[in-house]
Figure 1 (spheres, rainbow, N blue to C red):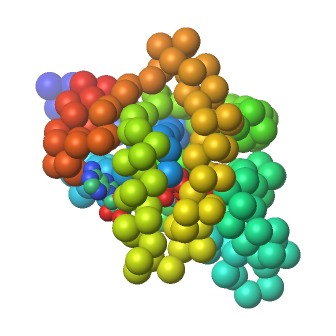
Figure 2: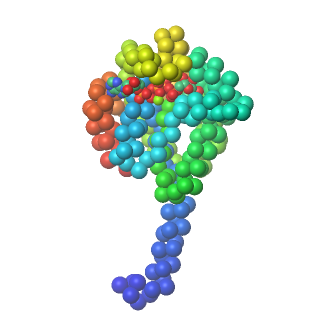
Figure 3: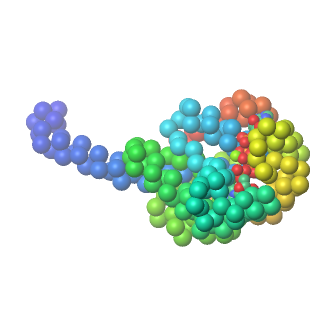
Amino acid sequence: MISHFFPVLSQRVSHVLYRVALMMKPQVVFVLGGPGAGKGTQCSKIVENYRYTHLSAGDLLRAERGREGSEYGQLIDSYIKEGRIVPVEITINLLRKAMEATMQKNEKNFLFLIDGFPRNEDNLQGWTTVMDEKANVKFVLFFDCSNEVCINRCLERGKSSGRTDDNRESLEKRIRTYLESTRPIIDQYEKQGKVRTVDASRSVDEVFADVKAILDKEG
Ligand code: UP5
Ligand code: MG
């Protein structure tokens, strides 16, 4: 009706709606859990079923490590082998650039799964400083899995993954870092009522059924 009587007004309204969509703030889900909990596996399944873009901080760091001319290659390499958390200045820039590139390609891609970040206080502070104004954290998707299951999954994957940290020595360090540095970050978000926990020790499909229920509810 409005468009029949007021065609110009109708055009303006759609133009404004279009501009609002363009200015859409990125909506972020942080995906956390121990090494091998299944973060990457579940993120791939989410991407198949929902409009999310998956950004794995670990994958971005591994790509930067291998990039010719990168000034951080060696540093990243040694941090990953030692299961230590790379200084946030490096990680946050990789994440910010990847988010910007995604939205530049298509402004409708404003939903992000940020996998494996933030892992410690330094990461959280870096995010707050650089991204707090730019993006909204919807919730934390937490894949809860025993250390034993996590280690066994990574050791199994290590037979063919080529990952320099899928060996028992690195895994012990990764688990320690996870318990000492990352769990407290999850606890902080829990206190804010922002954590959605999934029992990640079950089969991929069983875990994904719970993930779907959460995403269908939360959007
Ligand atoms: N698998 C998955 N789900 C399964 C299931 N339900 N049942 C049976 N098997 C299952 O899965 C791991 C393996 O288990 C695979 O073989 C899979 O088939 C199987 P995956 O989905 O890859 O688990 P994920 O949780 O993603 O494990 P990943 O090893 O990637 O976790 P990490 O958190 O340890 O690794 P990430 O790549 O995030 O980080 C690596 C390192 O980078 C860190 O240790 C750190 O040094 C550095 N880093 C930073 O410094 N800062 C960051 O912000 C991020 C990383
Ligand atoms: Mg992963």
